[in-house]
Image (cartoon, rainbow, N blue to C red):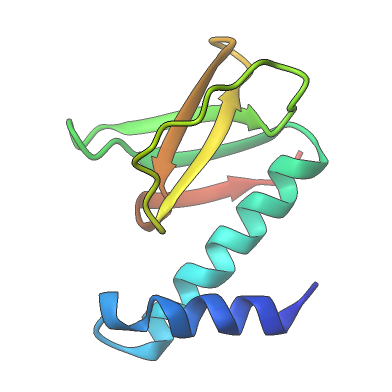
Length: 102
């Protein structure tokens, strides 16, 4: 765990939140999800921004699958490969509800 990276991220996005505490919660969530996605398949829940529905996903960051990055990557976006749909997806970390430990 690299607390320095987490605090740097929290400081860099501080202006997007009402308090530093909220920015730190965001930074920890992004770090935890990114770390787990890198190490294998992760199950997590999030709210889909366009419809407001609760989504469950099983994702990974297996870069053996071809991926073409989009040009509009925002600071709050986390890309992942949905292993159930066999497609690359992304989610807004601010809508992350829960990460399940498998």
